[in-house]
Length: 91
Image 1 (cartoon, rainbow, N blue to C red):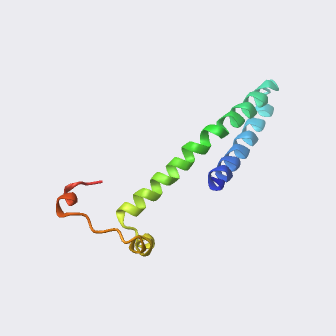
Image 2: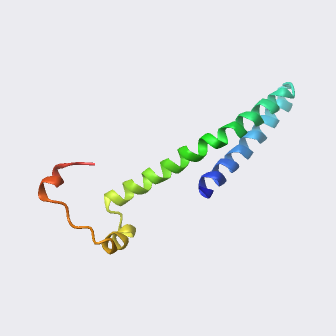
Image 3: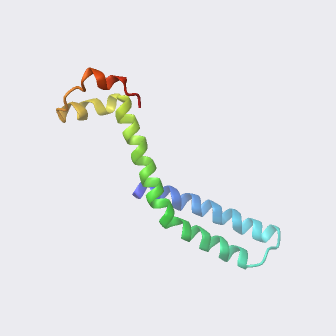
């Protein structure tokens, strides 16, 4: 969760800096920055579960592909090999 929050925080900082530059350069009203800040803050609770589930899906995909860094952990689980008819299923 911390990784998602850190990336979101960095992206939010950059977006708010760009909004500040646009507000000054285009002489937009102060409400532009207020709306931008509220939008960034409202997106944070949405980004947390979406980002977390995306990272989990990427991890599961790497495990299913047989990435070498997971082989030792999978071997320790003592999971039996699938039956031959299960090999026809493609992920």
